[in-house]
Amino acid sequence: MKNQILLFLMITIFSSLSKAQISDQNYLIRTFYEKVYDSNISSRDIVSNYVVYTDTVGYNNAVGTIESLRDPDNLGEHFSSLRKDITNKDFTLTSYSLFDDKEKAKFQDLNAVDRNNIYRLNPKNTIQQYLLIKENKICSFFGFQKTGSDTYTFIVY
Image 1 (cartoon, rainbow, N blue to C red):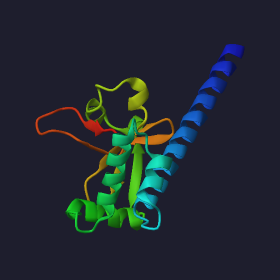
Image 2: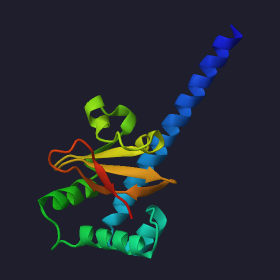
Image 3: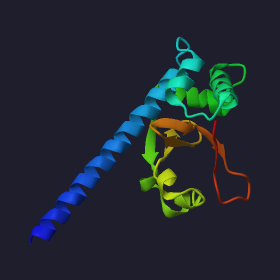
Image 4: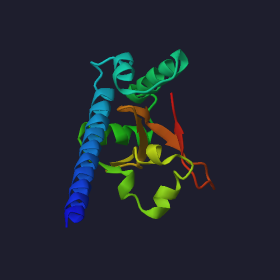
């Protein structure tokens, strides 16, 4: 009986911690995108505070990516719709644990820890995007899946 109670408590605690982590990651992603589209906040500050980067080149590339997202002349239909959906809070976030098996297979090359830190941004008016979280920061907010490939590749800075 004691073992069953202990097992129940462990499952409850693990479930609570997992839900708290997902909540924290959702807040991180939402705040990141709100700041990306707030032109009063510098791209450099956003990268410094929210993005994992490996060196000066990675830092500068991340800053350039955010500046491109903000530049209306660089925006195609997808990124214009993404901006509109983010600005209007017209999107949802889904954690890797809720992906179906086919979608999970795209990330089979990543280790289990990284896979469990993948989130899908589901904008209302454009295609979904995947994000990878590491060290309580965004490791990647861009990626691609080549035609004919089964795997998704994250762009890291």
